[in-house]
Length: 233
Image 1 (cartoon, one colour):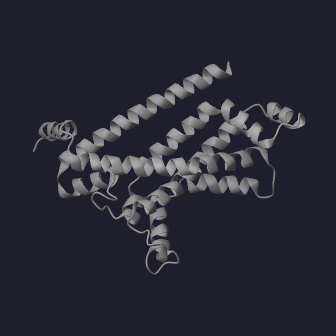
Image 2 (spheres, rainbow, N blue to C red):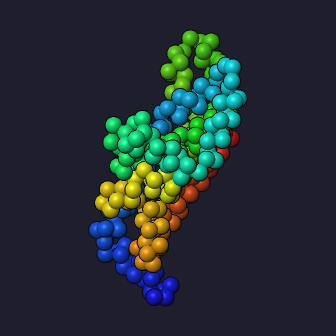
Image 3 (tube, rainbow, N blue to C red):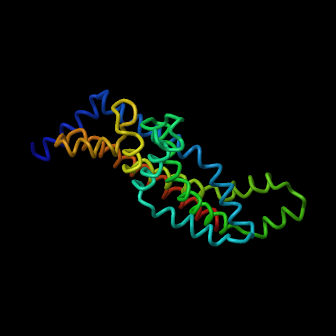
């Protein structure tokens, strides 16, 4: 089958609302949105701690966060597989080859990305506003909320970047999800499997979905950056 015919078949799958195809898309989006939603608040709090607190080992912790961003996702998947397998310390949880395991894996992948970007965003804010709030007796919670609002555009950009990182990862999802149709098969694992079988139409269709997602996310990211620039001038 030629490239043109494969592409036409792929668009046919998309526009015909092929149930199997869109089930894969739904699993992928559900897992990744859940993962990023669960780590946003902890990442903000941890980033705030790193940006506005001084404690022994702070820079070592920052270096560790930056290092964790570079760990291949398949390595994270392997470690999580060893923990969740029947012979592992968390085997009784029976989470292996479930969406829950995929969500945990993507949370581990996403967290250092969010912390690194959010730390940079919070650290670039005017520290005098923070110091003034503390001097006036404003509560830490209210001060943090004000800081988050002032940094909302770069923080949202961090969330978008974190989501784009996990929605396209394949290694961890394959290891702990098992690529089970209708349950744990997401877009990247389906593309890998279909391409390996030589059935390229579904893989191309799913690739088109990821391409459109990337375009939307990049548009959002550019828009947020533009608004952030306007805000600071």
